[in-house]
Image (cartoon, rainbow, N blue to C red):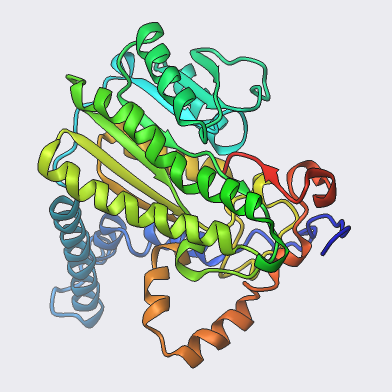
Length: 363
């Protein structure tokens, strides 16, 4: 792959935006929505149709079934995630790692404009120079000493942090045999160990906060499936997911006022994976950062514990590992997950050789 340079394929066809996620979204707000489901028997009744008529019976049974599913879903969510915490944005101090560009910058800007106090940690300067309500701190999250110093600076300058969004990541994009030990260590430190550094630095403040707190961990479906040329990244993201689940279990016992949000997206349309081929635009569409940001912001605003997977397959990816190995092999070939990185370019179309094979960019 050395010296290879290519640009992402263009999606020119009229049906390119169509995906299974869009279809499910339309169905959930229409055919699978309780309100719409009950409109049908009401319309039949308005036409003086008797209750024992077949269309009336079918429509009532369907509406009752859909309503039951929504009720069971609400009960399941309450049992799984508990009661929400109260969130007042004027009292929130939100820390975003890798927030100088991409998904992190989008979240930081939204909260800054809405009146929250936001601190961005990144090795790079912010793409927009500055944003309202956002304070930039130059920080390499792999430097645990600097992370601890910045944590103290933020508490002194802005107040006690209440939300930590661990978002920073890098992608090397090489086969294991082609990576140097330094590249492997840099990748694992940035994508995995940095989460421990930031949690050790900021979690005590969240525990002290009178309004509670929220920890957001941005992982990836690659941590479950693995992929060729992503051995380091996959290992780190698998570790991040396991770490988050263990942390959530600990906090439920010791600090129930702290909420946890795990984000496991598929391919996001950010420079982190620029040039990567989309395996299947219908079943596995590229996710826009704004869509992931909306889900994260919604979870934080509502004070919920949550798990966020996008697109649809990301919410069911755990079932992949229970499939027979032969079926898994066929699925991998059909999806193209192990050939997608062959067109990897990286941030802003920079050749890998010009960056020593490493591209640093917030997920």
